[in-house]
Length: 307
Image (cartoon, rainbow, N blue to C red):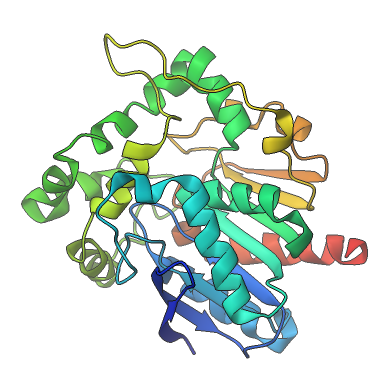
């Protein structure tokens, strides 16, 4: 059964959360992306909370700016290190040692998952990334791959000052198109039922500015027409490395994040497994939740001896 609660963090941010499993058990944390919310993980929360599937304490927060979580007005409040801080403080609120046994992250959640794994690797057991680019390979592809530049052009639309107002027009017509443009798998986007749409409407009506601010604050987006390339800093490699055993699940029919983002990933993540999934899109968590759960479970079994 899913429980909901609001957790106030020491940094003043309150995160609305969904959870399953017994507090105090090894922590499995799930981070969503845009334009999603914590509810997308419900099936996996319940699955991995069961004793036969690990008996984890499973928690999925709504990121700052989403659903009922705190939504600071300042764009600078959405800088990546601050959302990584939210993850770190949420983990400490669940366990005194702040250890996350398994961190599962998709899309924007993956950006903060990569960041947590780099900055707090001593408190992370294993990392699962689902269609979320590593910052090192993403920066490279945005600078040198025209196909990825074109695929990521939507980021500039979402960074515009009026983006949230335009997204809300005509019953969120633009947001539905993000889902419906990708129709891989036997059921296409048949998962997008009216009941699921109502869940999304409730999230979006709570506010879209926080999600759009993620696009406004990041330098990792393609240059707008007529503008120079973004100033992607040449940061030390140690800012991007991840020591934890890592599974990357990559749906190959993702129109926004192309497979070139996987090239060279092992240079940053030595203990890496990549599972490419044909016939699945960016919304693979919705499309194939049982498959995703099975792949995560198999990965946890394979890496159990290393912990």
